[in-house]
Structure formats: structure tokens, C-alpha cells
Figure: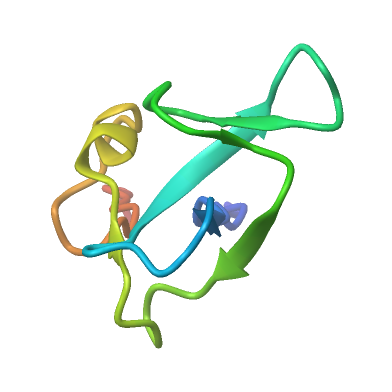
Length: 84
């Protein structure tokens, strides 16, 4: 039996910085391909910076995290329950 690796979601820092409390968002393509919209629907931007939350001080957007199924509050890491 083989298992396929599930890639973690890509988190991005968007918008004009600095913000008081910057949040990383999950960005998806908008209707206009030059822009991306956050999964929570609160941000839209042409400029975004990919982030590695494991090495970053930036917190993931809780509303974006809530759009993912099976994601705990441990900074957006996916958990798999595989029977061996």
C-alpha cells in the first residue's frame, strides 16, 4: 500500500505593511487573474509574499484556517489519520 503526500496549504502575507498585527492568508485566484483573494474573503491584492509559518512570526488568519477541513489550531498544519 502506498500513500501520497499531502502538501500543506501555501500561506501568504498580503497588503500594505506594516500592520499592527499582520496575518497570513490563504490566497486563491480572483475573477481578474492579476489579483488574488483571501480564502476568508477579507483581502484582495496583486502583491503577496509566500510565508513559511514554521519559521515566521506571522500568525495565520483564523478565518482562512476555518475554511480548511481537518486543520487544527497548530499554525495551519494538516493532520492525517492513516490506518496502518
